[in-house]
Length: 88
Image (cartoon, rainbow, N blue to C red; front, side, top):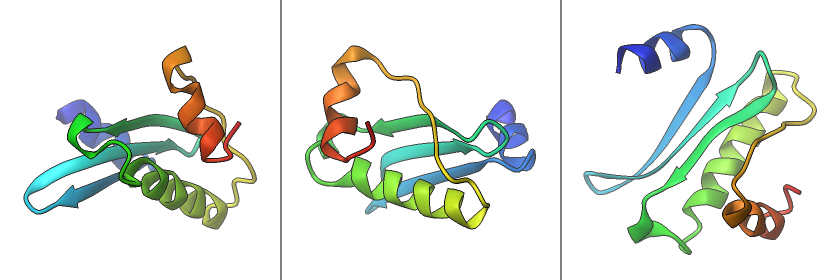
């Protein structure tokens, strides 16, 4: 938790999407590197638009910060997700 707190205090962005009292997903934007540093959707919430909502929010905040485009690293299993969202 301390590492995450430091990371956010350094000017990066952490977004969480909740469903009731549960976290449905998380996304992190590394502004310095213009990079989507993390995108996680809890398995119970996959296929429900959580990942897209998180990506849309990160992209909007990146644009407000003057970032024209983002990079990311992904496992081969997740490439299709990013393709469907138009991010590849």
